Amino acid sequence: MASERGPVIAGLAVGAAFVIMFSVFSNVGACGAPGLQISAPDLERQVGYSSMILYGTVMSAELRPADWRLEGADLRYVVTISADRYLLDETGEHRPTVTFSEYGFGCAYPFRSEVFVDNYYAVEHKKGEKALFFVAKTEGFLGTLEGDWTSFALFDKFVFVGEDGEGSRLLQSKWYRIQGIEPVTEQNLEAEIKALF
Image 1: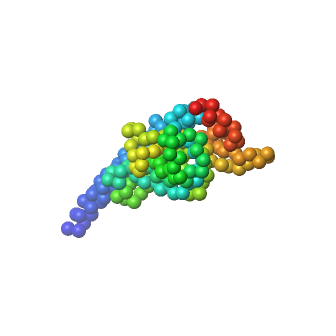
Image 2: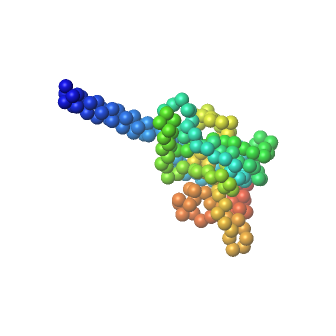
Image 3: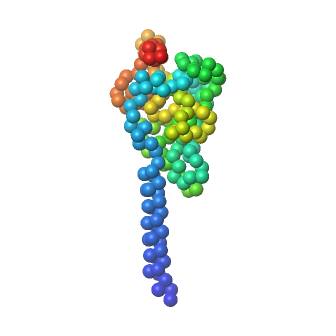
């Protein structure tokens, strides 16, 4: 009797493994936003779509699924920054902190406690990081996780990476770094941005 159960149990195990593998790979393939992640975040587009452009420091950055109820949900960063100085603020409020959500370009499986992040262009945020942020008013197709503001790969950010030989601070975005574009001085970047208003 026991010997007859062996093949049955083995067959069930193989079937279950197939179902699990199919579920995992099908969910991974469905997550992320391929149309956004490969779009070049040129400065003109960043400025044109932004409602706020500001220097700030990352206070917190938490990677969360967009919807905890969904298995294989797209990831978002919920990022809160302390605002140091505004170049643009269409709200006129100049709030001291800004919280926005950003696509993390991966998948979260909350019911399996798994996170999958694998994207060359994904913009990451680290606590204490100082940068120039481009933030837009959330429009419907992006969806909201927290608040009414969003940023994503199209907007990127320019992080402070050092100083030049004359004491000017240098900034560089991830996209510029990937493309081999040298860091730009704070003054030159601001001049470029203001010319696009």
